[in-house]
Image (cartoon, rainbow, N blue to C red; front, side):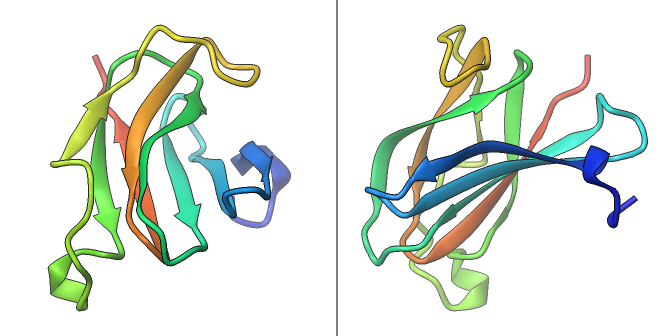
Amino acid sequence: ADFEWRGFEWMDCHDSDHSVLSFLRRAKDPKDFLVVVVNLTPVVRENYRVPVPAPGFYTEVLNTDAEVYGGTNVGNLGGVPADPMAWGDRPYSLKLTLPPLAAVFFKPSRA
């Protein structure tokens, strides 16, 4: 549920140098989750790594910088594969393009 901590998990809340936050939101089924990444600066962040808990393809399901919202359409061309490169305390990571002053949401593919 939205008001319970088990549905929320920080991925990285320590990157104050780049003003980027990332977190995970889980549904009742813990394998059903979204990765949310927020870039709080007016600078595009290329090749930005974010830790994720599972392998697979992560579809970009929402990009607040999309043209439909009046943005510049900077993004990840619909999604990215998880790399088997540990990042933070996670065994996998995503290499992303973060649009300026925007949030991007990713949903992993289910096998």
